[in-house]
Image (cartoon, rainbow, N blue to C red; front, side, top):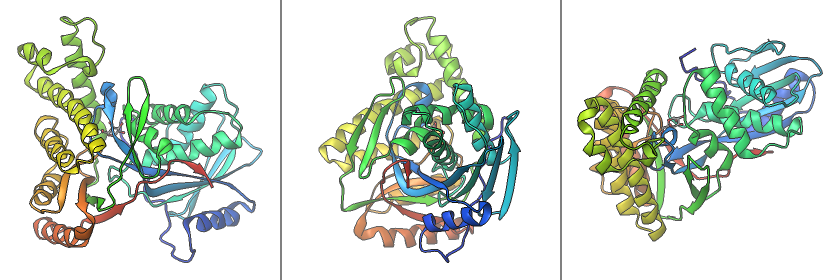
Length: 399
Ligand code: GLA
């Protein structure tokens, strides 16, 4: 496919139900006339360590209080029937032969396909999908869809898979059914999130460590540029190729390296002349970003949010000038955030080319910051940006 299909807004704007859970169950009863199993899985933020996951480096994500919900029940057929609340439309797919489709349903098909490929029995299911993870905003709505659905299927068919197994199947789905050669960060975070903690994940060994994000006087604030990152899928894969090209050249000198994770600044500089300018810049960003992440974790452990924030600003500079995955809207938001004293750090978050900036803001000043940034952005781009004040929450669960 080679083109990322965002699971377009499939959640209902219906305010009638007191909770999303109630709303999803009610829709399921109306659509399928039975009781479902319900699972949810959240979107994520990433504090620092962008594009490092597919370079086998480190990332520092956390699951947030925006979730995708899936309600499912077996239907004793070999068909997937799915109702997306936003569209008020039901789609059906035969599971005799599964292949990628345009749009968000491809993620559900991909999960079933890969569970089966791993030797598990998954028969037909009825599904309702809903949620409130903003789409194309860099908060990993597609990973949340895969994780919620995968988590529910694992439970329903008694597959006995670990959260990591489900994350890896979600990643494969993204590769094969959406054509995005992503790393493991998003699926991992959606499944492994822990309330009040960020997770330092080693994307090579898949070992991870929960680090308390214990700063009650600060909030993680996301500002949505409202630029949907449509370039992201093709350019994302190009970035990955450029990093791989750098590694293959450096391997001529250092046969022991298998990714940019193994490369240090000195090695990179020593062989700069052998790399094209673009490949050098991409590799340089990744090598520095990994270093920033390790330093950043040390600052967090010491409770030094100010120094951590400085690293976020530096990371943005790298994302914008060296890795070139920012856009003028994100650059503007970060520049203005930097001028606001209560902002500790800010940068473009996620795959890039739009979506959200992540900002760490003094709680007492969050409201002021929101109106400040909204006003400036509106004046500059004639677009109203959305601001989300997030909470760090647990990962996927059966409800
Ligand atoms: C997207 C991908 C992740 C990661 C980020 C950038 O969200 O899905 O695997 O590479 O971009 O850090």
